[in-house]
Image (spheres, helix red, strand yellow):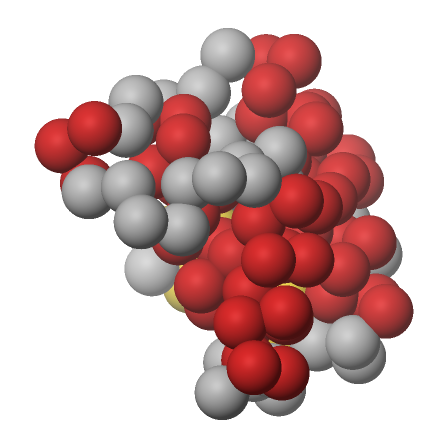
Length: 109
């Protein structure tokens, strides 16, 4: 349990959320809630992390910081990240891109 609490504390610090371990959802902004959600997802050491429009409710600077942190932490922990997004800046950061057009996978849009 202590090791788990230390891990949670490190992840919260990584996401800039130190001291929020007892915060209730209603006490968080949308951006804070999103960062907590990613910290929780990564805390379970998944093999794959799925994210649907992860920066949609964030301003561009905060969104970029969040994605860079997610990519960094997932690379460190060898987690595959699958992101669905319309954000061209976010798409440009991806190592591999798959596009859907009219429900079909295409090589380019």
